[in-house]
Figure 1 (cartoon, protein in one colour):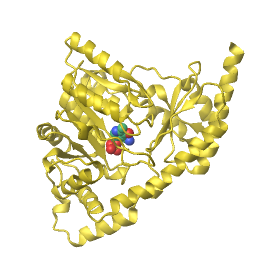
Figure 2 (cartoon, rainbow, N blue to C red):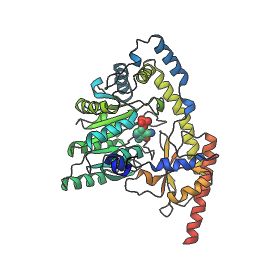
Figure 3 (tube, rainbow, N blue to C red):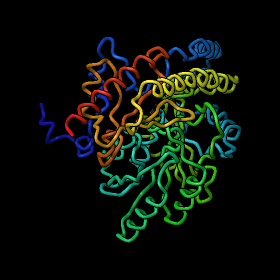
Length: 410
Ligand code: PMP
């Protein structure tokens, strides 16, 4: 065999395997309650509707469903998305502003491929989506983290970092944010900060990449505007996916941006997969056209809200009080975020937790600078309400044990 160490490309060598994947291997043991994954509840997938749609499509097949399609995406789906974006978010776009992607992960890859040259600075949230960080790392970006609070990215800190990059004459490429019920933290960026991001995209002439897989999964409260809607500079690219609102197995997403940016992305996508599955695009187009989409999202919201409530309730009930442990209260999405006292390490505690048959994802995995060792991400969409209660009880016991070890050491 060839020497993989020597022959693999720089991009392959730079691509790190996900810490989560490694840890998830440990959690695949019987009896473990896992808050570690990020999967939707598969019992909610609308399989009967999909069967009906596929059956109907098959009856009137004109063979185009099984043919290659345009790289930009099938016009039928784009037409539905134009309506959806206007109805849900008041965003007026033309089909030319949309590129259908093989889910959002491909959108992120296209952004990385399209904009990053090795050592180009990009700015991301601390914490940020791990799959995004992996892509940007593989293209050799110099990833700069900006701290966040419960209203999203800290604007003053972002401004300082941008000023510093201007001063150093650095060719920074984009700011990457997950503004709605962020993966991992569950935090939503406030309207004020969204406006600031648009202001900065203008002032610093920088692209803002808005990755928003969870936006439609809102349980309560009012949604701030999409950054894309607030934009007046054509410097915002938005990524959406059907993974959380329909089914991740379809591998369907869409990028919304200025026509000129979309054209460049289309060129890159040609070399990735020529086009996204035409059949799957037509299934989604019909799902939207026949009016199932919002009903489906609403039924999912009811279930996830119940699970979010169960997790918040269990945390309130079982977590040690007065020890500086806090957690976010997301108004939607799939995740919440726990902050432990600085003295505790969620990384070290992970193995104890697995022994006690409960799993989470270590927060440091989402920090491009390795910080956040006292944090963890908990997923509430996949486990059942009963599992959530038992799992949080187990987790609280592990934390209590860890706290008592620390106080003995002091
Ligand atoms: N962006 C974010 C913020 C995510 O959380 C995920 C995965 N859940 C993705 C992108 C990729 O999702 P997909 O490729 O399934 O659309």
